[in-house]
Image (cartoon, rainbow, N blue to C red; front, side):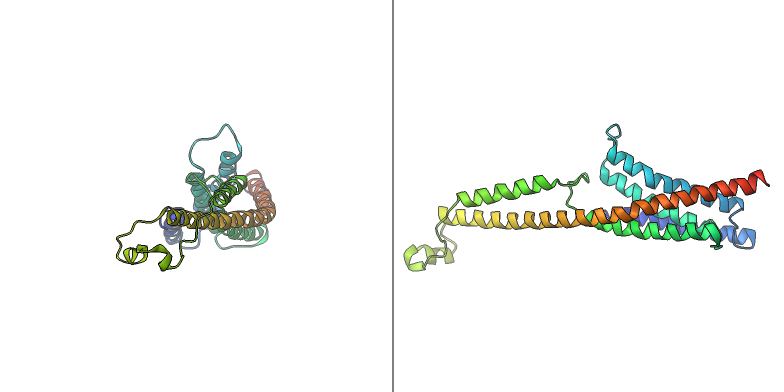
Length: 247
């Protein structure tokens, strides 16, 4: 469990360190660091860079044929880490002054983080291989079909027939002295096949349900992310214009 959630642990530790640095800066300034201060600017720039990494790196790794280094599961961990730490820094950047465009940006940041958390748990419900690649729907259906075909090919006799028909097999089996008959071994194999078929059928249902949820989630998350970065670029442009060109 710790291995699966280590990106969350690292993100929490990083946010604790950033919060401590923020408190130290507050003591040094004698007040809450303003967005226009060196520390406030540093938080904003670093947080925005991390959010850009969140938006681009994982998508490039997943979609670009030229970028195949590293396992997808590791890229997802980086995606989650930057997607939590970056927005946290951006929320600290305005110095608790959530007015105007900064307030809109902060609200969008909170929404995109909440959407990302929901997406993470939808994502983890999709069956995957050890390196984080989604198990193909057709592959699952093929495995289920293979198992059902093997089950149909085997027609064992009923291993639960009365003890009188089995002669001394019943008492010997009770004493652990009798070996299983071919029919019993076949019946045991069929039970294993049924369990495996049921497991794959559940995985198949989960895969279909998760894909539907992911499609719905993408329809909300992607436009929300694009809106966030549009507002962020407008905010950056306005800051440069008023603070630099008119300063």
